[in-house]
Image (cartoon, rainbow, N blue to C red):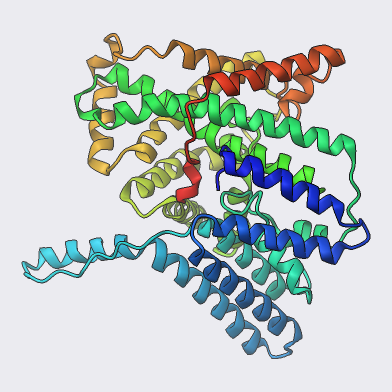
Length: 473
């Protein structure tokens, strides 16, 4: 069930009405209803997925309770390892089995052996990468003693399956998000209005910006070997806005829907294309995943506490794992490695204190913003290419004399949509939600007229119902 589908347009108003019809002092009933609604939402794709998410929920619920009530350090560690093995084992089995088998067959081929391992085509459950990391963070936090295990299974099931952010994040931490299920929910008009505004903005970024970019990007990347460097450079820039509009648009919609139900989700994007360096970019892009890897991988590996060589290695490991998290393909590994080699030198220079960048973004910062954006776009070639060979072909053309030819694609209307999005974000860049600055200072009539224009654009310039990119991760 997609946010931009007719089915969801029917599903959510029904859930909204029934949810708020439940008395505000019946938080357990509200939580139970949300779990049922979330399971219905998730099962709409494939009811078999429900078995997997229910299994993961029960495993981490009981493992956390076991850790909480055990005095034996070895038993605590064994339970943690059980959770890690089960969750990561399921993730690896569904997501990486085919990739691992292909690598094994390549190695077998080097021995001139005639036999090959069978390639399994396994259906990837939607959102498994997101909810797996979410449940793991809960179990690890209980093991570390930074939070207590909850005894309320319904609330924990809601934490794992909350449908607005279930399939593509943000990856919520239990310390902040789980207690929201037990709090008394009272309908707040201003919060609901903010929710509607976020949903409209998210749909605009997804359906008008991202999906129109996608039509061009898909066509030219499918025939990239026959395109000039200028064409592929322009198309890659469009992909940069496609993936941003698609993923951050999903997050805005998720945050808006959550607000309409009385919940607050964490900020996952903070104008990443206004970043002034690669380190700044990773403080602004997919923030919940970046923080997850920092807290549960980078710091346990030693973080910044070791020598420079160990820091290099830790950063490289984090980015390689981040690449693999996105998909079972060498292109994602190369994408992660590329960002690691950009990130490492700047990170180390920053540690010396020679470079200090403020969070404020000014007109004078545009040269650094432009350079950072172009470097990120080079990385997007690896991310979007069908395979590593195609990525090298595209980059070789981009860095050849054909870069100075006239591109064969002229997406004038798409650049207009991108321009509208960037202008509104630039005006509102000091706020977590750009339209607060862009629209809320306007008179009431002008404000709602502006939102009406966005809605009209969503209706008339939508590229049709298209899935979200991160659903496949």
